[in-house]
Every structure is written in structure tokens, then in C-alpha cells.
Amino acid sequence: MSIINFDLEINRKGTASLKWDLTEERYGEKDLLPMWVADMDFASPVEIVEALTKRAAHPVYGYTAPTEAVYNSAINWMKNKHNWEIQKEWITFSAGVVSGFTTAILAYSEPGDKVLIQTPVYTPFFDSVKSNDRVLVENQLKYEDNTLKIDFDLLESQLQDDVKLFLLCSPHNPGGMVWTREDLQKIGELCVKYNVVIISDEIHADLCLPGFTHYPIASLSEDISNVTVTLMAPSKTFNVAGIQASLIICENKKLQQKLNQKQHQLAFHGLNLFALEVITASYDHCNYWLEEAVQYIQKNVETVQKFVEEELPHIKMIAPEASYLIWLDCRALGLSDQELKQQLIQKGKIAVSPGVSYGKGGEGFIRLNVGCTHATVIEGLKRLKLALT
Image (tube, rainbow, N blue to C red):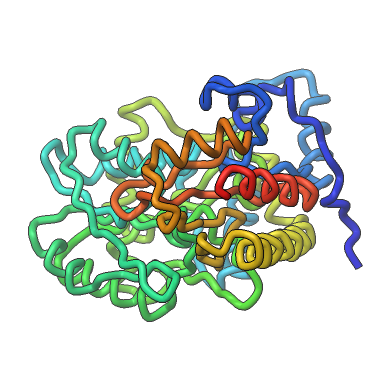
């Protein structure tokens, strides 16, 4: 029996919420139901709220540094949640995963160097590569059997063509795939073979849905770990993205030294005092909350699956294996991406993430966020039907 009321509707308007307060500015219409940006509408665990409240009650907010407790929380979480034994010396803290992988790109490559990504993929991947004058290499995923798969022949041909970095999204966003151990092993072995550094964004790792297991790519072998920099965070897991806390985990001392040097060069390193509280509270005390959240998200996913099959037969859904983001194939509707966007906004009054923004292979798709109450999901589906039929 659930002890957490995930059905509770929480009014987030007026809280400087990107999702709820800036939707009109982003989409150009009033009264849209926001089911786009990847945060959840659920209250964070009470243990996190209490830890932040207690720290805020202390009237001095001076400089802070990570304690042994913070490191131990991260180490224990990785071991218990992902069967990955890491050491304190491997951990560097960062304000966020995006700033973390951008810093890594700067640390391990030079302007003009090639960075490989797998499209369609999380949009900041493009920005971090292009805005820092690196050359983008796109390894487009194959859409087969209603899921996205890796074209390993293409991948190997690209990696051997002087690629310096592989920016991996694992689990995948927006597709929702949890890469198999075999897939990750192949990726790792190819990167070892061609001396390519893997920067692995694993921010959705904790949110695997029932029946699926996430494998940190660095945990697969000593050789793969030696070329891998892993980024994780409690932000998606416990809905605390606004606190800005993440971890960069790297066993290779030379790679970690380069990363730390770049962080200090940019004068952008360390965590704020509330981030320290969030890491310890969430990783030490909130796994029970996560387990219930995952079950609730799975119920939302099943609701969308049933609705799409019965009410929107021209749309295909890639059932997510992790997280609360659903990738919907709308290509059979015969609409351009602009027409699809306009019908959703003007006819359906719903704001979703357009698939075309995720690069090649995203055309004709949309990404739907179901990290919300079941009632909101039902309302969103009604609006989708209104827009697309």
C-alpha cells in the first residue's frame, strides 16, 4: 500500500517554475497544459524538505565544502542501487549534469575536434558541442520494432575517423531506452579500441521502470572505466533539479585531473550548501519514495499506452524503459513538424517537446512528460486526441 499521495495536485504557478510559469512565453499561447520540460509535479521526499528546512534555519550561509558524509552517501548509493563500487577519489561535484559534460568537453578536446552523439537526443548535447567550436558527429539511431537501436557498423566507422569524445545518453532521452549490458559492452570496447573518451550522461539511471536494469558503462570493465567519465545526480530522481547538484565520477586519474583543472579555470566548481544537504538526505533516506514514484510513473505509462492504442491508432508509442518521458511517433498523421506543433498548441492546448528539436530521427515525433498526477495525464491525453484527430 502506498504511503505517498502522488495524486495530490500541487499548484506550482508563481514559484518561478520553468514548466508552469514560462510555458506561455515558450509556446506563445495561454492556458496550455505543460507536459514538456523534464521535471515532475510531485512533492520531493519529506526527508529532503526537512533537511533543507533545518539547514535554512541556521542563520549563517557561508562557504561550504563536501563532508565525508556527502561522499559516503554517493558511494553507498552507487553500490546499493547500481552494484557499482566507486571510491571517494573518483568523485568530483558539479552544479549540474549539463555543466558537467560541457566542462568535460572543454577538458578533453580542442576546437575543431570531433564529438559523437546519438540522435535523436537531449538537446543540450548539440549546444555544448557546437557552442564550443567542436565538430558534431551524429550517429543516428535506427527506429526498428517500435524502439530505437544502435547502428554499430556506422558507429565503428565514425569512431575510427578521429573522433575524440563520445557523449552517451544512458538511459536514453528522449527514447527512454535502457541500453542492455551487451550494447554498452560493445560501445565501451569500441571506444577503448579507438581511444575515444566516453562522457556518459546517466541522469535518468535511478528511474528504471519495472523489469529493467541500468548498468553504469564504467562498471563493466577496468578498460572501459579507464576511458569513461560518468555523470549522475539526484535531480531527476527526487525532483530537485532546482537545487543544482550532480556528481562526476571518473576512475582515470589523468582524466579527472584535467577535469578539475578545467573546472578551476572556469571558476565553476563545488556545490552550494543546500546541494550538500540534498545529496545526503536523498541518497541515505529516500529510496522508499523512489520505489513508489516508479510504480506510479509505470501506471501513467500504461494509461498512455492503452489510450494511444484505443483512441489514437495512427500514433505509435515507444514504451519507456526508464523515466517519465514518452516518445510518440506521429508521422503517420502526415503533418509537418510545424503543423504538428500548431495543432497541439492551438487546437489541443497542450505543450509537449517537439521531436524535431532532438535532431535527426526526431522528425514527426513528440515527447510527452508523464511525471505528474494521473488526473493530469488523463487531461493531457484528452487534449492530444482533440489536437490529433
